[in-house]
Image (spheres, rainbow, N blue to C red):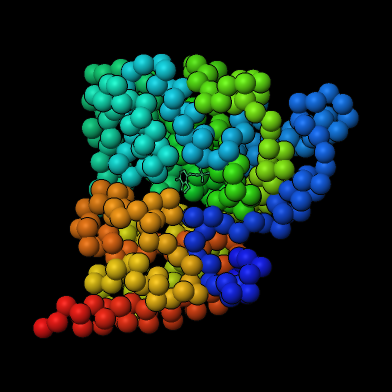
Length: 395
Ligand code: PMP
């Protein structure tokens, strides 16, 4: 049995391979969230129930700090990674100087970067990627030497391909000239070990629902002493050390903390299992589907993600032909939009190939049986779609 995706019997039997869109809630997170929802108390209130809520939040902050190897005081709870990215980029932009990011960032970074530099578009530099999806940092070297760079924001793991970025040399080069580094670790945190006492980024964003916590809660790590002016998006009661006003989402934060602790304890084992399942999925697809390609398959990736192009088989048709497999055509945030994946285009794919790419993302509750069922379904779906396409295109 795979993860329990839903109580709805219609979809209870779905093979859920869309962990990058959202992971199923971990049992530990469900239990902690439910208990917190059943308790009264505003974490800012001074009475006993309020202090009790504050204690739960403190505990969750410690649980997350343990996952990341940072200090609890360096964490700001947010509504998710979108908000954390907005906060990070807006604060950095308020310092003036150039903003550098990459062409394969999530829209929560790319669109924010464009928005905060809208009035001075020459202050944004977007680094290209190669055909494996690796960020090309070569143009950055001369930029760092010759221009005033305020912030470099590059993701640790790509949400569509899983391709990892080696940030350490970039951080070193950036710090030499006083630039700050932000990373969107939304797909990385809770899936691979992350040690902020080693990885010297100044800012990092994450989201609970990618590692088995509830949706609608995340965090921004701000390294102690980082020279950043607060640029709160929400102004009010001055919560979260002035970074984010508003009553804390105690139940969500508690669920995030519980998921972080569960992920930390099981992370290495999960990464190993998930990596083996992904390998099995890719081996079977490559053997059984003519002409399919794994994007970013030659470089280091997150263990659970595979982006597969099936030339001649549009992804929306493939997904529709296998309704009991939940996967994604591109990123969930842009699905439904008519434009092809900016990530695959940046990697040099044609529009047709980008439109014929399916992302499968596996996670802590994925089983061998899930992979077997998915392979059967995908092989058949691609065959059917290709046959239908060649029948309609005619001789
Ligand atoms: N960054 C990345 C890399 C993501 O994959 C996502 C979610 N798709 C986000 C940011 C946005 O996260 P959230 O849903 O918490 O706003």
